[in-house]
Structures are given as C-alpha cells and as structure tokens.
Image 1: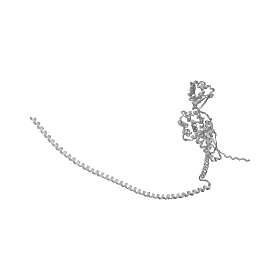
Image 2 (image 1 turned 135 degrees about the vertical axis):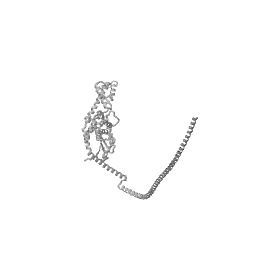
Image 3 (image 1 turned 180 degrees about the vertical axis):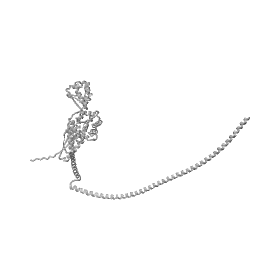
Image 4 (image 1 turned 60 degrees about the vertical axis):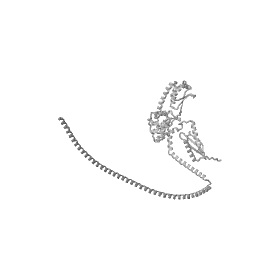
Length: 513
C-alpha cells in the first residue's frame, strides 16, 4: 500500500515537472519565433527598397540610351536630307547646262543645215562645170572616160610590174652574190667527195637455177617442199613458166634473202625435203642475223661513230636489205652521213654529231613492229628510247618537217637527204609515172598565154619555155618564169628542184641582092 502511494506520488511529481518544462520551452520558442519574424520583416523591407532603387536606376539608364539612339538617328536623317538637297541642287545645275547645250546644238544644227544647202548648190555648180570640162577634154583627146582610165591603168600596171621585177632581180642578184656561191661550193664539194653506187631493189627476188628439173624437186611431192619452204621463210615462192628462174615475192627483204640463201644451199646439196628445209632455213636465219649485226658494226666503225646501242646497230644492219625508190637504204644513210659531216665541218659545227644524225635519220624505216606512223617520228622515238643526244633526236624527227627544227644540224641532215635522193641515178621511178610527170609539167606551162612550145629536159629537172616575141615582152617573160615556177611548186610533186627557162627571141632577116 505504501509502495503504491509512493509510485503514484512519483508519477504525479513527474507530470508536474514535465508540464513546467514544457511551458518554459514553449515560452522560449515563442520569443525566438517572434524575433525571427521581426528580423525577416526588416530584411524584406530593406530588400524591397533596394530592388526599387535598382529598377529606377535601370529605367534611367535605358531612357538615356534610347534618347542617345534617337539623337543619332536624327543626326543621320539630317545628314541624308542635306545630301539629298545637295544632289537636287547638282541635278538642277546639270539640267540647266543640258538645256543650254541643247539650245547651242539646235543653233549649230541650223547653221550646218544652212551650210549644207549652200554646199549642195556649190556641188551642183561644180558638177556642171566638171561635166563641161570632161566634154571639152573628150572632144580634144578623142577618148572617152573609160578608154582613158583603161589606158592609164594599163600604163601604171606595166610600170609597176617593171619596177617590181627590177627590184626583185636586184634582191635576187644581191642574195646570189652573198650566199649562192658559197652554198653551191659546199654542196658540190660534198657531192664530189662522196661517191656511192646505186642499188636497185624491189619486192621480188629472182632465183636462177641450172635447169627446169630443179623446179620439180623444189615443189616436191604434192607441193610439200614448197609449202614447207614458204611456211619456214614467210615468202611466197612463184614457180611459173619463166625458164631457169624461180621468183621469191615478199615485202620483207630480209625474209627474201633468207629464202634465197636457203634455196641456194638446198639446191647445191640436193637433199630437199621438209625436215631438211626447216634445218637449213634456221641455219641461214642465224647467219643473216649475225651478218646484220656485223654490217651495223662495220658501218659505225667506217663512219667513226661510237657508243651506239646494240639494238640501233642491228637496225642499221637491217638497212642493207631495205630500199626506197630503188635506192639502197644503207648506202643512202651512209651517203647522208658523209654529206652531213662534210657540211657541218664547212659550217664550223660538230661533224661527228652530224654524221651520227645522218646515219640514223631513216632508222624509222626498219623497226621490227612497223607501226602506222611517219618514219621520221618512229626514228625520233627510237633515238629517244636509246638515249641519243637531243640534237640527233631533233634532226631525225625534223628531216621531213614532221616537227620543228631546233638545232643547226637538223637543216643540214634535211638538205643532205634531199641531195642524196635527188642526184641522177639515185632513185628509180616507174617509166609511166616518170613520163606522166614530164607531160604534166609541159602542159602546165603551155596553159599560160603567149607560150608556143615547152620542153622538159634533164630528167624533168629543167623546163624550157618558148614564147612568142610579139606576145610577150622581156619584162613579161621574167614574170612568166616566176608564175610557172610557183604553179609547179604548188601543184606538183618532184624530187630536187626544177629550173624554168623562158626563151624569147626576135629575128630580123633580110637579103642583100
């Protein structure tokens, strides 16, 4: 019982103490809350006043900037207005000046029209007086205006032609005195110092045999031997009724030579059959290849040319079996090389380099593949390929004017090539074409008025033209020779050059009795 009372008393005491504590804490918290609220109200009031001040300052700043922009805009507008006014004043001044000029122009035009009317009247008067004078002159001279003009024009043309021909002859004579003599001397000396034999070749080789019995052995049973021979050599073998002869036909002269030598060995040996034919052809082909190289080396040594590529030496050797218009290509190249060396030495140039270019100038005619290009271009590319000097390369490519000449050796090689091809007996032409060319030359000269007869002489290198003395004067004869030469040069193709000689003769005959 006592314990219970004690417990109850303790609970009551704890409750009283807790309540007193709560009350104390509540009053303390209430005071702090009131103080915080008061402080917050003060802070908010200060912040409000500060923001109001900032807003006022911003407004004043923006107002000042706006007023400044407005002032600048007004200034620009005033400047533009001033410029517009100035431009208007300028335009007004220009308009006044233009009006003034228009008035001046109208006044000038009126004066000009008045003067033109006056001149028209004067012109009519002048025309009338001129016609009267012309009528008087026609009555005095007995010639019309057209007749007088024609006579005057003819006289002036004749005088002009005479003076022009005299001037041309003076220039030609002066040029001949200074250049022609030396040029002829060099060319003649070069030709005299180089003498070569002309070789005549074509696309056919005739193989002579002792008797027609050999033809049957060459043909073989059912034609096996001749087929094997044609297959091995690449040459067409023609066995016809020609007595004691077999024709070897082919465009490649090397193959024709191989076929000829192989046939010679087979006929000499007497053993002719397909296996033997292949063996002999292979042997002969090897011999020819060796001979080609040997000929190329010997040619280079004879001309004093060193350092040639082995392929170029082989191509030089192949020239022995090539021909152009019946002229052996190797002999022609040797001739051009010698001529080029002599001319280069006479002119103070490098003769060894000139001989090198002269020897190689037609190297483009003997390549193995033979592309469809001018032989000068092919030769130039071959020389470039085998590291020849630029002077030699240019001379090879330019000797037929395929490219531009850039060295002094190039025209020398071109001239020497023409000399070698144009000398008498160097080249062979078909008789029909030769006669046709001579007739065309004579007919071309006969087409000119005043020509009586024409004669092509010196194998077509000179043309004699006989004219009537009563139709052609001496001055006209000179003009005629130039006209014929120019027409032949423009319309015909010929080797070397053609000399045109116009002959005008007057004979006076009388008899003493």
